[in-house]
Image (tube, rainbow, N blue to C red; front, top):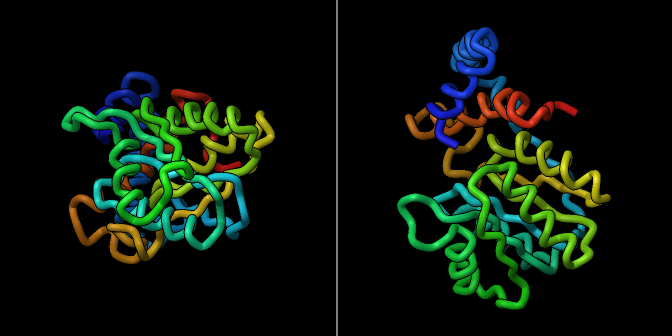
Length: 211
């Protein structure tokens, strides 16, 4: 979700919280070393039923990392999660599938969730795929700065179904690594969007990010 839309939504619901959050953002930009531990959740890798790859990455790095984990044997299936974007004719899930085929992943190992446009929908709709196959565990692949929000949304929804969630984010492999994210406008915007996204999701869905 774009940063402007998140701020606009928060201004309507909790203007005082938005002011406090903007002060926090200012402190974050001053003390950049706080950011990676704040936004990153990295669990020890364990064998699972599926690897869920979240959309929103135009570099292909999430896909490449997920395929690497798949080939290392951490899961036997890949789920690509992402719907249609405004400027694309195909869904993100379809595009990831085509790229995975070129990397040697067999078609029968891949499953598509092609309706989601938010992190919450990523979790909600992929849950249907996992339930349909009676799987009970998965690895979530996203970028480090998105991993805390993704992990607690997935855990909140999946815990009720008895499904174990492992967070395996991109770190140095990310387009904007934890130690240099502030060195580009796009990296700064992306990290701030994910920072603001935590209280935004709390307001919208009643979810708390640190559990």
